[in-house]
Length: 238
Image (cartoon, rainbow, N blue to C red; front, side, top):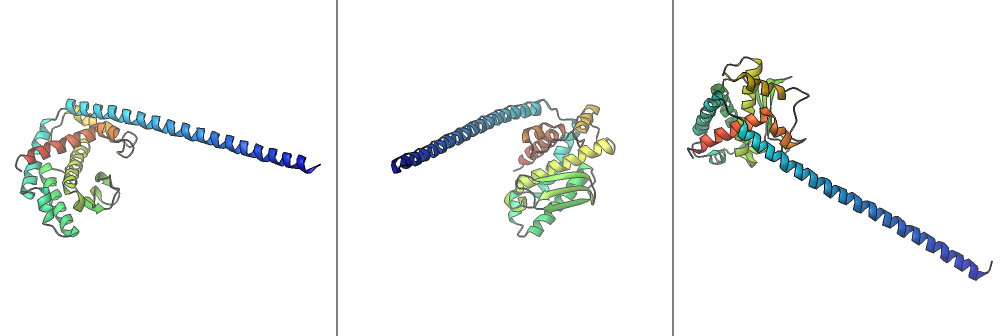
């Protein structure tokens, strides 16, 4: 084979390889564009669903009627906050210099709230949790029994949110004890049934899965509205 033929063949082979690479790149670019387009569309759908769920949460909050025991407990809890925070929550926490002093103060607050709300509590635990996780109430923790666990990050970074979390989790204590230990405060059978339906292991939706779906649950809607009521009453003195 003469040199010219060999050169032409080599050039053709190089051209074919280049064409193949160009086609492969175009295909990859097209796949990438399709993926990005699908991702954008999915995110838009998630946002739209989130907006719709947020509207449902607001509608349910409007329709969810507080019962008389809640109104009494809200006033009692607000009075406790007024005693513990005469100059406001942040002002009080600014006077507490160490993490230990802040933890002790919150435990003292919870002890008083426990008494006025008429619930039992075996342990209050401070630990590092995910930044979005303020705290949790456990009715029967394997080690401690009735337990509130609080995110210690909030002791310094957001004490107001910490106190709201305390009230929220204490309301869960009220819910569980009303269901399982006798309805001492006199909630309606309908309200107890709404709470009971949510707390089963297979029924409860965690906030890290879908916050709106989590907030729509009767136990969470009830606890959130209770916090709002307490803070509103507390705010009247500040």
